[in-house]
Length: 189
Ligand code: GAR
Image 1 (tube, rainbow, N blue to C red):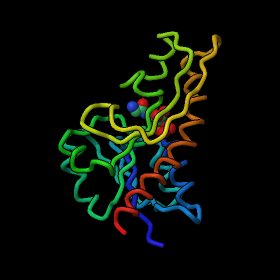
Image 2 (image 1 turned 45 degrees about the horizontal axis):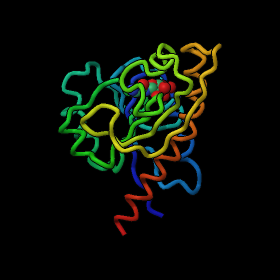
Image 3 (image 1 turned 60 degrees about the vertical axis):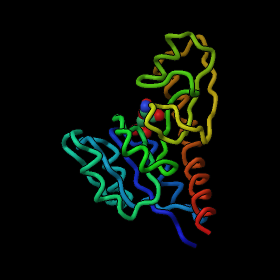
C-alpha cells in the first residue's frame, strides 16, 4: 500500500508530534512521517523525533522560514502543524492548500490565535475544545476536519483546561490526518 509522506512542523514540546508519529506506526496508517521541522532549536519535540528515528531539521531564526524550508519538502505530500507557533505566509498557505493542516486548542471559530485556552477561561465560556483544520492565509479560519468539545468547569483554570483539551487533541489530530490522506489518495486513483 502506498503511504503518503508527511512533514510535521513544530516549535516546542511536541506532544501532538508524538501522537501523530505513534499513530503513523499503525499497520493500517495511510501516512508515514518523513521529516520533522522546527523553527526552534531547543524544541523538546526534536528529541521525540530522534527517539523515533525520524529525520529532523531546525532553523535558528524564523526569518525567511518559508523560502528556506521549500527544498526539504520536495517529496512531501502533507504538512501537519503541531504546536508550530509561526504564521506561515499566504503564498505558502496557498501553495499547500488542502495539504497543510493544523491543530488548534479551541472549538473554532471561537478563540482563534494565541493562548486560546486562556481566552476561553477569561471569557468564562462553558465549553472550549480543539479543532483540526486546513490552513489558509487567514489565521485559524480554514475548513474544519474534526472538532471535539471540552466542558469548562468552575474549578478549571488555564492549566487544567489545557490538559483536558490536549488529551482530545491527541485523539482527533491523528484521525484528521488519516481523513486528509484518504481524500488525497482517492483523488489520485
Ligand atoms: C497544543 O495545545 C496546540 O494545539 C497548540 O500548542 C500546543 C502545542 O503542544 N497550538 C496552537 O496554539 C497553535 N495556534 P505540543 O507541542 O505538545 O503539541
